[in-house]
Amino acid sequence: MNGRSRQLERSNSGYLTDLKMSNRQMTHQTDAKSFISDNSNKKSLPHWCDQGWKMFTEYSTFHGVRDLSNSSVVYLKILWIVVIFLAVLFAVNGCYQIISQFIEHPVVVSYFIEDAGQNLTLPDVIICPFNRFNKTFLDEVNITGDVAQYLEMTFPGPAQFPFQERIQNKFENLSVLENSDMAIRDVLIKLGNITFNELLKIASIDCTSFFQEKYLCETATTLMTSAGKCFRLKGIDQVSDGYGYGHKIVITLPKHLYNPGVNQMLNDGVLVKLAEKNHGVDHDLTFIPSGVHAIMPLSATQYDFIDDPPRYSCINTQETNYSRLWCFEYCLTERAENICNCSLVPAANPRKPEVCTTKQIITCFYSSMFPDAVEAFSQCRRRCKAPCKYWKYSKTVSISKFSHEQASVFATMEEIETLKNTIILEVFYTSLDYTLIKQMVAMTPSSFIAQIGGQ
Image (cartoon, rainbow, N blue to C red; front, side):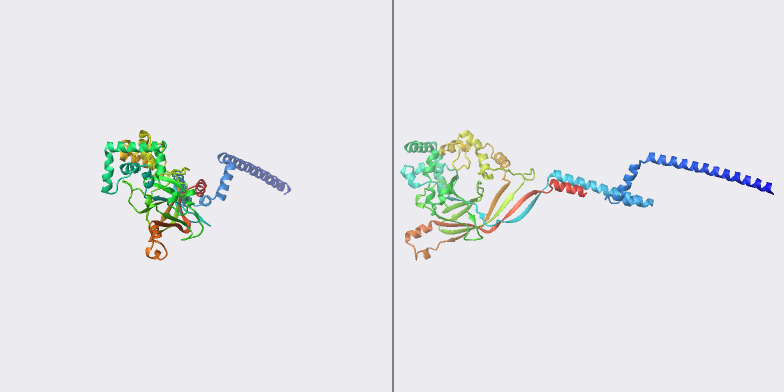
């Protein structure tokens, strides 16, 4: 029994030993396979990339990426892939649209009502009487009849009526033209060998003959237009709204000094223009008859545009006398001024020091202006751009005649006659605010970056 039990113990011990060795071999094989598998995974996907992808899917704000990573079903993964693809496609298209708009440099127009605060400067007021020369002076220096009309025609302009045309046509005769020109030259010699330009200035009626407030002439500037000598009165600061706080101008027309012109407007009164301070005049024009009280309520608009051709083209200029009208005139007369070596009397900015006489205008200037009028006008329109920043004044003129019946109770006959030639003009803002119309870039660089970031 003892021998058999010992034999059984030995066999069991050997079996256990073999089993342990077998288990050890299997464990070593499993560890080897696991090691080989781990090494192959590490070679196919680096550890840093695996961790980076996990962090990207976990913390990314790219909508749909996390859902794609967490999806365990195939059709959900396909759905999220399609959604992400479409989102990327739309984002790229949005970025393309934003970049295209930024490159196109779009401009938007804004509209504001600005409060002027305590005061608002009124525009300069330009007064032009319908007269060019002082008849008393012309009579003194023996400039009368055809010679006086020869002097009037240095201001170019057509006759308004047939009876004016008859006299104007006389100067198409070269002998009449030559005789009148010689008579003017004799007058220049008698007056101390002065120039023709100096004669025109001396022969004009002085500023103080028109305005009751003589101090206005101390700061007024004179300019020549087709109507004759005009007076530019500086605009004042209006300190409150409405009537009574504006610029009041009393004008008395010295008609006894007027010299009738063959090509002059036969209007009774004055021509009034408004102009922005330190800027040239434009096409603004208002007729006011004599013997009236005229009020001119204004509303102001400031334009601030961007030179953005071809959509809109303007000029940034600091020239104090610039206006599109002045530029257009300057452009049209350039060729004739260079050929005839003289400038017209009413030129806003004459190129030549000498003023054209009537003889030069008829025989040289008119024929030299432009060979092709249509092409010249088209070229000058392209050349003369509006200023990018300027003011425009909208006005409504109301006129009331003076009552001679009421005035006769207090005034003498002489004063009543003076009243017939008097104009009271009041220019004022209805309110101390103005409209600002401004062009601005639709997309600034900061806005461009923000919109791209939003995509």
